[in-house]
Picture 1 (cartoon, rainbow, N blue to C red):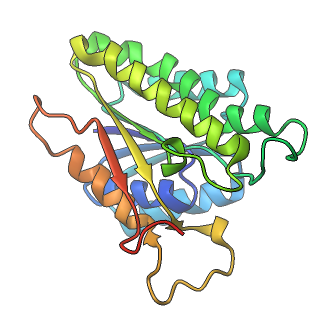
Picture 2 (picture 1 turned 90 degrees about the vertical axis):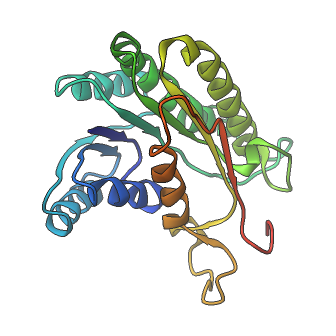
Length: 232
C-alpha cells in the first residue's frame, strides 16, 4: 500500500512510519529538516528491507509547498492511507503570547493538513477507497493553562476532521481523528520518563495501525489516548 505520513522525520510521525514500514508498505514522508528526514528514510530502509521510502523536504505550513507535496505523492499513484501528522507546539496564553503565534499555529497545525488533503483526497474519492488520519490532541477537546493559539489551532483541526468525515462518508473513504495526550517526544526535552508517566510515540502508532485492520464497513471516528495516570 501507498502510505503518506507528514511530519515523519521524528516523534509520532516516525513511529507511525516504522509500524507501516514493518509490513512492507511503500512510504512517502516529509519534514522540514532535510538532514533529519533523509536519516530517517535511510534508517527505515535499512531496518525494514521489504519497504520503499520516498522523502521530500517540505514546509507544509506554506500552501504552495503543501500542494506540491501532494502532487509529488500522486506522481507515484493513489494513496491508500494519509496521516496528517505535521504540526508544532508553542506555549502561550491568548492575551500575552507573541504576536503572530496564532497565524504560526494555524499554518502548522491546520493549513498543512487542509491543503495536503485537498490535493490527495479527490483521487481517493475517485478510487472509492482510502483512510485519512488527522492527528489532533487532547488540546482539541478542552482548554488548559498555556494552551493559547496551539489549543485554538487544534480545535480547528478537529473541526476540519469532523467536516471531512461527513464529506467522505458516501465515497467509502474513512476518516479518523486521533487525540493523543502527553507523548514522550523531543518537545519534552530532558523530561525524565523513566517511570513511564507519559505515553510513548509507539503507542499512538500502534493504535493507528490497528485501525487500518478493521473491516471495510467499520471506521473508528475518534481515538483518544491519555497516560494511565491522566494528563499532566
